[in-house]
Image (cartoon, rainbow, N blue to C red):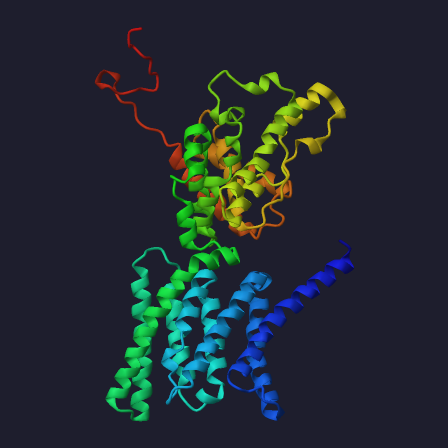
Length: 472
């Protein structure tokens, strides 16, 4: 694609996103009867459009990943329109019932799918949009929705346990109650009217949070976002792919578990997604299931099927575990975010062992491209750290005396090598973060390779010079 075509495609994508967002302003104006023509219609469109523009600009500059996802932008727009439609319906009662507006539904969904900051800001913009409409302009609707939306957003953040649902409902209902109490006392409303509004807010809290969690699975699929709950589901070691890996390629399975520990510790230390790194590491080598015996960790001592193959053939088998892993992942419905670990954990690195053997065998006629992984290079901090953990863990097994000093030297060598090869050029990791990653790798590996004391063989133990005395 030419630079001009790339620029045109980018401009077109921006136009589509802004058309979707500005459609929210049009819908808001239409739902509240503001498209009747004249200056009032123009004023309503301008006012609503300015609110939506602030939302769009904030996403574009401060949450570019959300803004770049057309599906995420579409979801935000649709959620706004749904809440606006319910607000328009609630406005037809006498008096209008803002406590029936399900802003908590949007806040909970956005907090789980994106993050609490996106959720809070989106809730503020939605509250402002509703509060600007004629039926609610003279009331305390804006205040009520601001308090409830913020409370709902902060009550969720990351769902790790099922009972967090009750906490979210309780916090949202309490926010409704306190806000309604404040509004009622300020306005001098009768106690019965205040309690009625508090009751409606409590019912709204239950319905909104429950509905948000019911909608979460299909919306995860629609947006392609891997939430904490989805990652927990795929971390189950009884999943078919992981069960197969443990039975058919036990060496690879053990290697995978060690990498998962390394990657999670390092990601947590630098502020990346540790759970994503762990689960991605679980699946990064599933392509080895096609031909497990051709990978050294699954081979018994003294038996290596590569000894009978040409170096180029061996390299092809090794390289293909990436492509075959992606095929298996797609067959089993693995989320796209986890498939990235399969594609990127070797980047575009070379299969150096077989490349050297090919050069010794065929000389200068060898094409190095035949001995390179297909890539791409890691695009995220999590896949980059998984790549480093893979190299470090495999290299540490070569050490005969895995003392702390040698382990640190191996880690330094692997990280420096990957940097020099350009494998980390697109990963969002700073040099300072890489130092933290190296320190975490060292801590975990030193723990893995710690020495134990000798136990006397006479009491059933094993010493360093153990020799079996069991009769043949």
